[in-house]
Length: 246
Length: 110
Figure: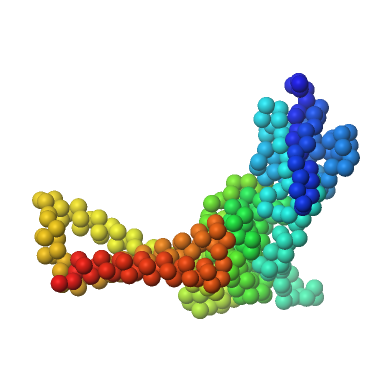
């Protein structure tokens, strides 16, 4: 039986073919994060445990996994905030294929970023002066609101529409698209708007706000997607693309 | 652009339905105050272009709105795609339209 100085941890072990939970007992430490727990298991209990992390300070978006059924960034999640009766259940992120144990394959997640035209396209060379944009500008504030995404895929894991509709671009890619739609230096807004309003695009969002509830950076992809819906509908009805009324 | 068209059609049909539902409820509550028989109702609605138009438009909006909404649910919950999904959507849409307009014809027709 366990005591209060240890945490009972169930970790999903397996690969794309299937798997099951394994139980570990991990010593409790002050200010211990869920990532600390996973690292302890790999270093002291089972070196074959696979998981992913890099920065450990909430910047890189690598270490997200399901913690007691909820998607979280494990490096910034303290055990004492999420453990229930000193118990943790850790699983790979929902809605993504598993590679092994807690590491999932992010390929489809980033492919959808590309499909949503999630890259910046500028028209200026380095020899031209930097574009002067006021931080108080309405479009700049809309771009800023969506810009701090770290690509952790927590919103993607939290989204029920992604779980139902495999070709849905998902909250992260659409949030990224919205920040670029509000960047007046970007030259690809018409093509991006077409990409995000095609099948699998922003129209599928039910505004359930799972993404906004779980985003560790407190972004609101639902609001970004609503912006894309407004822009796509307005553009369709006026037969104009955003370049014309930006 | 099919998804965008369906999205807009569903919002526009909702915008049509909302005031018509309020009109329907308002007239119902107002007209029934002193008691009203089926015969008296039919006497008012038969041959009325206004009520035929109001309920005919309402049925059209319902058929559109419900068919698109159920199409989304069938696509998400049952993973229906392509011709099968289109067939289900048309059957639901036309089914509601025919049943609804038959009911309107029964109330408005002579």
